Image (tube, rainbow over all chains, first blue to last red; front, side):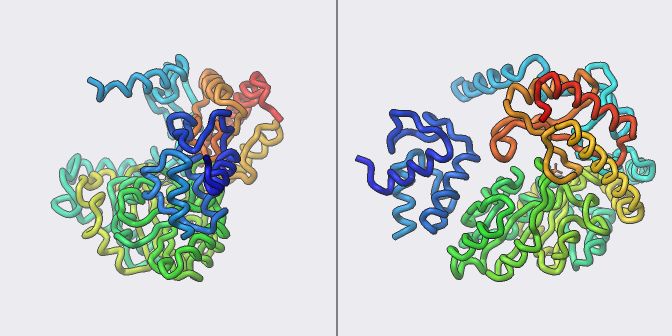
Length: 78
Length: 395
Ligand SMILES: Cc1ncc(COP(=O)(O)O)c(C=O)c1O
């Protein structure tokens, strides 16, 4: 089950690129969605503004999907 | 050989560009700053960064010739070792004097200047806030450093302000990084607002004037001069490879510490210094920039004229006239077709396909030069009219 945070992130992502019907929090943003680096950057800035946080790009090196993004955001808002 | 397997995808993408691959354009010969031979045909160069048309300037060419004869073909070494000649030091003094700042540092390219200045400035625990549309060299420079990297929305002081606020006390250790006039869309950074925001938070500001040196500002000192923030901006970086028509880069600052950058900057240390001829041509070009305001006037006359005539035709250009002139196209295929069509009509421009252009679209970047003749401008307009009409791309 997607957490409320994951659902919110998913909604932000949908504003940047159309999500396929089988999209899940584990879908790989780079391989499966083929997000460009500029779209990732846009996604991060959207997330920062929604949660009033700031995310260091190096923290994102390991982030491949919404579930992992939720972990980063969860830490930042804590 | 799995290491090489990735190149199959590169080769496929390259083939997708069609027979006339823009990345493989060869300029066979040059006739002037704005005319070359491509595929055996005379072609107007409308996709260079030769804003002031300096590449064939008689005084610069003669200065280079003399330096070549007197000081040889290259320095064979780093600025830190055997690669600093009197001319490098003289150019640094001239740049500092031009800006009215205490010191300047010369690097081997504009790319190295960005990497070198950022490497010197950004340590562990520092933060850097980068405009999302900034040039690749600024991103690369930031990634080279141990500082935390954040991006803010392009040309948006509010977006910057929010992020500096979120940093709290760390904002005092933050560097804000922007371009003056942006090199792809030709739009201008709102520097007065950005400088006010960074001052409020006690942060520093670095402006890359690659496309604005000699192009804007009453004395040609770029957007920092135009926006009236020369006493607020902390570091200015620039390149010799565009308006000055040579190669190399610099960082100049109102802070004396810039003179110590070489000691903390691997991109300064571990590469050979610009050749004596390059430095001599650069000094001559900088003199021309300062003493011949007609070059900048001619550039703007040409830019305004091209913008006016193309806008009347219904070409989708940037809002305000600028020597960097983007022509937006709806589809990637249209942009490739337009690029090839223009070349067939004898006009060379730059092609930007996703994700290279900000906003994710496809565009042709035209750049205007002071050296474009009226006849060349007429032919650029006629070629665009024909090609864009054939594509149904006129508004
Ligand atoms: C904004 C910007 N900064 C830096 C550079 C790098 O300059 P250079 O080509 O002289 O290394 C460029 C040009 O490519 C640029 O457009």
